Amino acid sequence: EAGVTQFPSHSVIEKGQTVTLRCDPISGHDNLYWYRRVMGKEIKFLLHFVKESKQDESGMPNNRFLAERTGGTYSTLKVQPAELEDSGVYFCASSLGGVVQGTDTQYFGPGTRLTVL
Amino acid sequence: GQQVMQIPQYQHVQEGEDFTTYCNSSTTLSNIQWYKQRPGGHPVFLIQLVKSGEVKKQKRLTFQFGEAKKNSSLHITATQTTDVGTYFCAGRRGDYKLSFGAGTTVTVRA
Image (cartoon, rainbow over all chains, first blue to last red; front, side, top):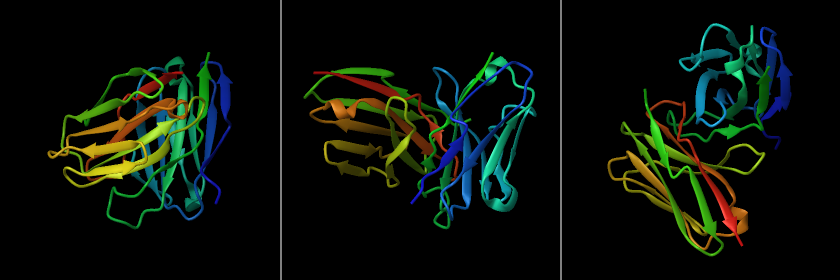
């Protein structure tokens, strides 16, 4: 079974540019999450999709970040315009759902390392 | 918001020795998960603890969940070079999102 995949693995952009990250969850997983790890800090939750709906976007830093999951399959996270403090590793995770809320396992993708210069 | 504190941040261990990493939450957790991230890799799920006072073992790894469901620990016995990496705890409070500790980065000297 294929795991969570993310593209690109690395992205280097200049401040003010736009970047779009993509996540393909494990097939059949309704739940999709975005997390971010800024250098030297803990991994932080950004948002959670259940199928195509945003269930919780309380972790999104500001309105420069836009996540979508059209069709309930893959998801994109767009940063526009990018700022220096957006640099970090963006992880996507997915889980099957359908069990007692908050007990299913989240499987993480390899992450996208974003560097904003 | 919910905070999960994890210590130590770094653990340098002699091969064959034991060590423990600890996580403490400011609020009661519904469950806690542990992940391991190898250098250059991504977090890989190790285990989930749900019940108060729960103890689970995976070979040389022992995971505990506190009675008050606010703290957890991971104890590794007879450390091997394959144990190198960063160990994260991640707590949940009745919903899906994970609140991660800062991680304990383990290095092993042979």
